[in-house]
Structures are given as structure tokens and as C-alpha cells.
Amino acid sequence: MSEKPPSANEAIKANSNYLRGTIAAGLADASTATMPEADQQLLKFHGTYQQDDRDLRAARRKQGLEKAYAFLVRIRVPGGVASPAQWLEVDRLAGEFANGTIKLTTRQALQFHGVIKTNLKHTIAQLNQAALDTIAACGDVNRNVMCNPNPHLSSVHAGVLKLAQGLSDHLTPQTRAYHEIWLDGETIHTSEDEVEPIYGKTYLPRKFKIAIAVPPSNDVDVFANDLSFIAIIEAGQLVGFNVAVGGGMGMSHGVDGSFPRLAEVIGFCQPGQVIDVAEKVVLVQRDFGDRSDRRHARLKYTIEERGSAWFSAELHRYLGYELEAARAYQFDDNGDRYGWFEDERGFFHLNLFIQGGRVLDTPAYPLRSGLREIAKIHQGDFRLTANQNLVIANISPARRPAIEQLLAQYAINDSHLKSALRLNSLACVALPTCGLALAEAERYLPDLLTELEQVIEANGLRHDAITIRMTGCANGCARPFLAEIAFVGRAPGRYNVYLGGGFAGQRLSKLYRESVRAEAITGLLEPLIAHYARARNDGERFGDFCIRAGYVAATRQGADFHHNLNPDALNIR
Ligand code: SRM
Ligand code: SF4
Image (cartoon, rainbow, N blue to C red):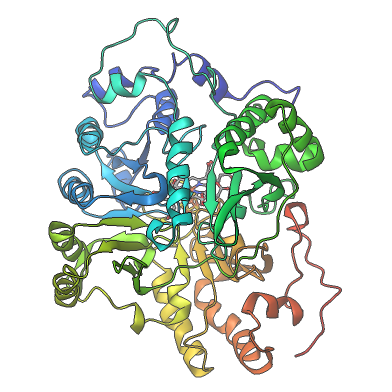
């Protein structure tokens, strides 16, 4: 796509002998807590990032110590389903090798933080013994495939979960490097007998993300993905999927050429074509994505620049057939539904709100212990949602009382006590582990919500869902540009405030105010919230209102993201 020379990562991948690099030697080097620079890039494909505890940086610098290095380990969970035995193992490893917390991510995966280099291999090996892996959880490959977490709600959901798992398997890298390095598999000294049939030696230009939604719920935020499938259900039957391409969130503050972008629906395919379509979309991006500039290497830029007509034509050429015309569908929201649900078989599912997706014990809220005790007696499974929440799924009527007793003992099932604003909130990890964070997110949003809840209560909006998301930088890990209200870190204690995202994740937001001090946020939003309570139309969502009232313009597509003129504003203040 570009005449410019390939980025440094391209050479690292090409020379890595299918992702081996010198990782094995680096792990064995006891003289340092870090890994060599190039291997740090390769480690991502194996599901782990080198980080350091940023809370400790200044003190350690003063003492002349090196940074407090440790690794993030991301566990891939296609479709977000884990057995109680797997949960117990994750819980044990979190205590033994990580920082004592389990992080539920915005892509239905699990993360450990704080794993030191000498524990990395045991941790990954033991996860694999529990049939959990980390390969391709990160890196320039297809990541964890998301889908609606509850397959027992209907046969359509069950079919979709199978497809998500099938897609994940089909697009998993084939290299034996993972087994060799982490599981003591047999060492392959030459790469001649090894091939990566889909990716090739240099894998993809950048990360690649897939999600499947079952309308009317867009709980997986399909429009933020490189590729997504939207289930089309006619007369109660799954007839196929609309195909959407070119979504993504990440951007750089103030850089016009970088922007979040909504995936565009380009056609429809039969259920039996899904894996083929996914593979060919991956191949088009492999062959045409920008390999010179990693900030410009996602599929969204390939499509934005060449156009979706070009992309469809190329995809059809790779497929050898054409997608059918897209079918009608309707999304109502992109949040989770909380509380107990009974399915058609009489089994129960409990969706719990997990603040910031962080499972840990505090004296006031021993969540991790409570979930551990539940896992010991639970005979169903655990399901992770794309909103960092947890479903205790498939509870038989006979088992429900025992689980309810534990929920009460640990005071875990409390979503009914929370405001709809909090229940629709998301924050990325940010400080202290994320090396890219410019400001707090997970550690600060709960307090900001407590302040905002007073405004919400005063205006009678306790039960009105408004999506609200915070990230520590503009990479968009909690998909802030799809929220009705978003705070995106600019500098310590300062956030850009975005408004006007669609309640179903169908529209991008717009910048409302730049670099607002954290202490000023509640005061900034108070008049808007009061105005909304006073002047909204029946059923009107906050994001829609912000546009109608002229606070921000509607963003139609990615390139339009940075332009904030609203000629349609009704000036109804
Ligand atoms: Fe993310 C980088 C955490 C979902 C866009 N993301 C990172 C890193 C690894 C920082 C780094 O590169 O050093 C963060 C590690 C923080 C930590 O300490 O844990 C990080 N991202 C996360 C998680 C854990 C946030 C969370 O609180 O749940 C999510 C893990 C998902 C998973 O299980 O795979 C997470 N990241 C996302 C999403 C949301 C999604 O995929 O639906 C996005 C926006 C969608 C997209 O990709 O456009 C996202 N993360 C990014 C980006 C920007 C990528 C871009 O091309 O624009 C980066 C930076 C990068 O890749 O260079 C990034
Ligand atoms: Fe880190 Fe930024 Fe992602 Fe938050 S949005 S986890 S600060 S990269």
C-alpha cells in the first residue's frame, strides 16, 4: 500500500523464525528482569507484555533502582466461556504468580498483571494445563473472537458461540514456537518444515479483531471491530450474517489523520461461509494493509483510503464469489442485562456487574473469594461479557439456592442497588500497569461516578441508562468513542470529554471539551444532565439529545470525527 520502507516490527517478525526470536534465551537470563527489545514485540503474539509498575517509578529512580518490571498475561477465551475448574485455576494462579487480581477485559478475555519474568513460564504452562491458552491474545494476528456470552438464551446464540470458537481456531497461528517455548515442546531448528498458511512469515500489518452480535443486542460492540458478523434471524431461524468491516477505536490526540471508525456493513453471507469470509478479509488486509506505519496499519485505514467499493471487489476476488446484499437488522443497546434470567430449559443465569472488570478482595467486598467459593460448587460455567462483566451461567434449579446463599454471604449480587449510569460504565486498565496511559481510568471512574450519581439522582435519572466510558489515553480500550459520554485521558488529571455516541454503539461521539481538569467534570456535565432531564423527548437517549440540543455534532464516519460543526442543532436550551 505504501512506498515507504517497512516498519521495524516487520523485520522483527520476518527474522523471528515464526515468533521464536530469542525468547527462550531471554527467559533463561537471570541477570535481568526484562526481555530484549525485539523479543518484547514477539512476546505479544504469545499473549504477554512487559510492563512496569508506574506507581513505583519515581521512588525507584530516586533509589537508583531499575523499574519494577513485570508482565501482563492475557488469557484468550473465545466467546468468553470458562468452566468452574478453569476459573479456580485462574484464581489460584492470580494469587500465586500475579498481583492477586483477575482482570476481565473488554474483549471477553482474562488478564493477570504483575507476573515477574521468572514466573512467566510456569504461569503460561499451568494455564495450558487447564486448557486455557494465551497464544494470539495480543500481537499482529486475529485476537480473541467475541460473541454474545449466553448461548443458552436461544439456539441462535448457541450456534454463534460455536462459530466464534471455530473462527478462533481457524485463525490461530500454526507456529510450534508457543509449544516449544512455554510447554517444552520439541525444538524445531529450521523453519523449512513450518508454514503459517494464513498469515505467512510476517503475519498481519497490525492487530485484527472479530466479533459476532445477535441483534437486538450489540453487547460486543461490533462496529469497533476490524470484522464483524451480525446474525440475521428470520422466523426464529438463523439465516446468515451481515458482514461489517473496518471498525476501530484507536487514535492520537489532535492528529487529523488518525481517528476511530465505525465498521461498515458490506453484505450478507450464509452461516457456512463465515469462516471463508473471515479468512479472505484477513488475507486482503495481510496483502494491502500499511506495513510502513504502525499507526496507520489497521484495516480501517486500508478501507477509508481505498474505499469500501474497492474492498468489496477485492474481497469478492479472493472469495471467488460475491456477498449477497445486506439484510435489515436492529440494535437496541450495547450494554449488559443484569440479574437473574431463566432459559427455556429452566436453567438460571446470573449477570453480575464487575466494576472495572477487576476481580479482587477488599475488606468491604470480598468478590474474588466469593467467586472462588461459587466456582467450587458450580456445575455450569462462567461467561465473560465484552463489558467486563461476569455471568454465572447454567445454574440448575437444584443448585440455585446454594449459589444464592454464597452470593448473600459475600454480598456479591448487588447490581439492583446501583444506578443505571454505573451499570453502563466501562473503564480501561490505565495506571499503574499500562505503559501508554496519560491519566487514570479504572482507579478513578468509580469515584467520578459517585459524584455524577448525585447529579443523576437530583434530576430523577437513577434508572435511566446512559453509556459512560473512560480511558487513560486515546487508544480506546474501553471503546469510549462509542459511548454517550466519554472521558479520554490527555495528561495526569485531565481528560477530553466526548458526547453524542449512539446508545446501541451505532454512532461515534464528538469532542465536547478539551483537557478538562478531573475536578471540573461534574460541574461541566451538571447543566447538560439537568437539561436532558427537563427537555428530552419520550424515550430519547442522552447521546441523541446532546446532538439535537446542539452540544455536539453527529459524527457520521471516522474521517468526520474531528469536525465539530452542528448545522442541524435546534438550540433548544
Ligand atoms: Fe487495548 C494497547 C489493554 C481492549 C485498542 N491495550 C493496549 C495495552 C496492551 C498497552 C500497550 O500496548 O502497552 C493495554 C494493557 C493495559 C494493561 O495494563 O492491562 C491494553 N485493551 C486493553 C484491555 C485489557 C482494556 C480493559 O480494560 O479491558 C482490553 C483487552 C482486550 C482483550 O482481551 O483482548 C483492551 N484495546 C481494546 C479495545 C476494545 C476492543 O477491542 O473491543 C481497543 C479498541 C478497538 C481497536 O482495537 O481499535 C483497544 N489497545 C488498543 C490500542 C489502539 C490500537 C489501534 O490500532 O488503534 C492499543 C495501542 C496499540 O496497539 O499500539 C492498545
Ligand atoms: Fe492503556 Fe490507553 Fe488502553 Fe487505557 S486506553 S489500557 S490507557 S492503552
